[in-house]
Image (cartoon, rainbow, N blue to C red; front, side, top):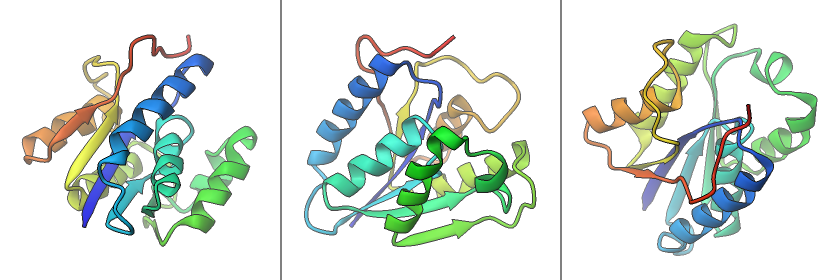
Length: 163
């Protein structure tokens, strides 16, 4: 069994969503062997949800890590709520972390769970360094590399972030 976690940007452009999903589908093909793939994701909008959908599409099992008790109520935007709920329902395991409020500490704790469980980390990441705030994609990549978790950077040609 292979457990792959994901970290990545939430603010992908509309065109990037298609590019990233295609790249994830291609990468996951090599792991699609019955139920031998477990994907671990926080299922945030953008990279996390694209990865979760791709894992399910190849027949993998999904583990969802929810950073805080209030996450679905206070963080998930209405435009993402239906997909978020669908992925929670499709998950084999849902871990809701004990943090009451979604904040940097909750995100860092969720990222620690991703790294702890991962045999590999897929990073939908443009390669920019950490912002210094903690809990972001670059931080997670650096932490994974520090503890020896292999990282596959997924940033196809033409991918971009909004804004």
